[in-house]
Length: 333
Image (cartoon, rainbow, N blue to C red):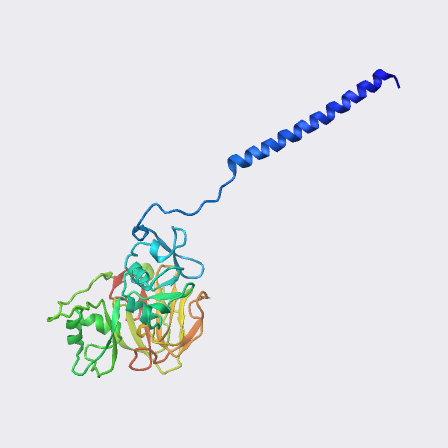
């Protein structure tokens, strides 16, 4: 092959390799440039607010049926402002660093309310990851002394007689014995010398529910109504029946509480179902609980059996509707 031909071939090969090298270099440079300009640099979480407890935040129900903060790095009680008082039962998952006082303040209830509802003895008994039931009633546990009456206890703690009667599933004429345990809702621990006037604090307004709710709930068990409207918001009735009578879901929904064993704020063994209309149905004093939290049930499904557990004076089902937004209503009153 002539010498000129060799030179041309060699020049062509050098040009090809040079172009390839240049392209690779340009590609690498582009990638590197893109990484340096667009790479998300890891940074530590910062909070410009020196008092995070004052930060507004919304709560929502998540998959594990717990109320969790939708803003903030962890959703802990320390990062959530006071939650508006509600007439529904809430379930809260304890986060690292949470304290009993923070949780109680967040839900607007007393620390003793949280302890009693979860069968805890002290604030040190709460642990990260634990789910706490938060009842919509703030109060204290009171041991009846000789000579006490419902009226005298109401006067002492500046509450209404009807509130004590409703919170303890008793009648206004019930006799008290020394040693009995009562829940005193919204108790003022500064004793008063005179009783307060009849009325209600922080309760839903009186009125009737929407017509769309009529027929929504089916009767949960066989039994005779032995007590009309009572409870914190006067939305509960008592249906008396022998221990072991079947209890059925009054409407379809998700089980958010299923407690077997313990006082549980006076409810004994009880179940709470969250319904798609925003309301909750509560079934208390059960002898048997046959559902678990997170389970979905249909209207009429068997969920447990009537009993005489908790603060109960005889076998019956305490059936309560929560979240209706009004007082003095229960479909079976």
